[in-house]
Image (cartoon, rainbow, N blue to C red; front, side, top):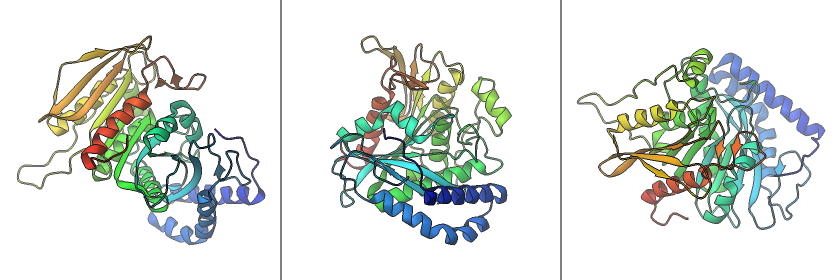
Length: 369
C-alpha cells in the first residue's frame, strides 16, 4: 500500500508523547487526564493533521511519517491522522476516492480491524478502497493502540470497566474529525469490522444508533455476550449466549431504532464458532421485533456457497445473516497472501457495500453507487 518510511527524530518524539498520553488515560480512566494533556499535545496534533491533509502530487510517499501515498495514479489518496478521545490517542488511515473535495459530501464507511492486525493490513486484506474508488465514498480505518491491548484487539468486552465505551467514544471522535476536516457526510456513516472489530462495530451501533445508517459484523460476537477477557473466550467458543438488548418499557419514550445489521460468519471458523453469527442476528432481530424469512443458498462460480436469511419487520430488513460454508476465521473474498483473508469466499467487501448502500439510499436517494 505504501513503502515503509524511516521515522524522523520529531516523529519518534511525537510517538512517545502519544504513548505517554494513552498510558495516562488508561491508568486514570477519567476526563481529567485528557483535559490536562490535550493542551500540551494540541500543537503537535495540529501539525500532524496539516501534514496529513496536504495534497500529494505523486503516487509515491513523501517525506514525513504521517503521509500515506495514493495506491496508484488517479486511484484516490491515503492519509494518516490522529484522534484524541476518552481512550487516549488513536491513529487512523483514511481513503479518499479520486476527485473528493470537502464541498461535496460523500458517505463514510468505518472499518475496524481484528486482533493482530493494524489499519494498513486490514485495508490490504479487504481491498475496500477499490470498491470506494468506483462507488465514491470515504473509508476510515481506526487503529487500536498496542498499549491498550497487546494483541491489537479492540476491547469490546470491557463494558463493566468502561474501557469498551471509552474506545467506542474515541472512534466516534475520529469519525467526527473526518467529517469536519474532509467533508464526509455525517448523515451517511456505516461501520463494519472483523472479529474483535466486528464486536466493537456492533457496540458502536448499539450505543450510538443515531450516528450510523448500517452496521456489519464479520466473524464477531454479539454485544452483551461477554464482559471480561475470560468470558470473551467462552463466548468465542460458543459457550455463552448474548443478553437481550434493551427495549422501551410500556408507556416510556421509544428507544432510537438500531441501524440494520449484516452478519457474515464462516461455518468452519475455529476462533469464533459459527453459532455466534446467528446469535448476533437473532439478538438484533429480537430488539426490532423482526422475524426470520426463508433461507436461500447462493453461490458464485467456484466460491464458497452461503446461506442468506433476512429478518424483517414490516418489509424492512432489521438483520441479514450470511453463513458461508467452509470459511474459517478470515475475511471472505479477501486478498490472497494476507493473514486472516480467504480469497475463495464470496466477496465480503462488496456484500457489505451493497447492504450499506441500500441504507444510505433510504437517507438520500441520490447516494452514490
